[in-house]
Length: 119
Image (cartoon, rainbow, N blue to C red):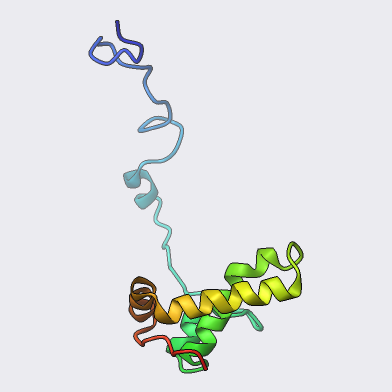
């Protein structure tokens, strides 16, 4: 006995709006004569760029990039654990990013450079 009715024939109800009065087809849109132009929006003033973009542009170093990513990864812990614990977690994560072979490869593939050892 089939619950999903696969192979029972008949199929489901027809989808409305396709090729009918619902939404216009490509030929209908093109035949109306309007011209469609795509323009790139200008970047808004003061919008923060992504850390990886900042790294690639030379604005920050790999070390600073890793610091930002560790900060982002642990931001949710800010009010949940004490400052000392949070500092330990961040330092441990940063150390793992610099020493764990798999994480080192991830950093290298994302940034194009090896993560610096503990400074």
